Length: 197
Picture 1 (cartoon, rainbow, N blue to C red):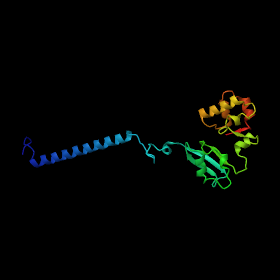
Picture 2 (picture 1 turned 180 degrees about the horizontal axis):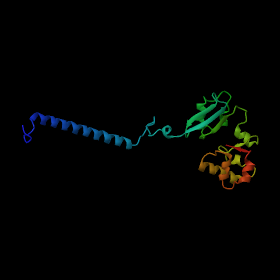
Picture 3 (picture 1 turned 45 degrees about the vertical axis):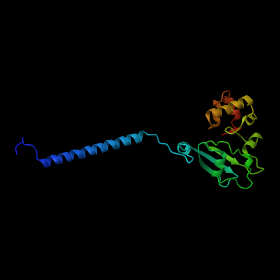
């Protein structure tokens, strides 16, 4: 057989079969590659138990709350963002017998770094003690009326403090009061021992 002679029929068949296998492998590789790219760019949606869409717990930042006082298991608890006082009390095992359940607002959202004190019946709660002048007022839970009891703070300034808290989130330190319009260094020093976060 010379170089000009056509290849044998068996060799042609093997070449055709080999080419077909290569084409199939390339098609599979391209299909898998497209699937991977589509999967990587597709949004991930987790379905909540109620079927409404993404679970808030999957995307929410944790909130650390220290629960103390008249609860079964006082301590530090990690809750989902948006948790309320009732969730913090439940995490701490619920109220003990004799707890003054009406002294805490169970519907209030809790904030990161908050200490939640549940008093016993007849015991003075932290906000009541602050209002009575026997303890510092919590800047993150006090209302306008409670803040108005502080020296040099009138109703308008108390409202500004509440407005700042609602617009910017919880106070992280007493020094954050300097960001409230109308509060300067002298007023901060007058309030420093009378307020807390």
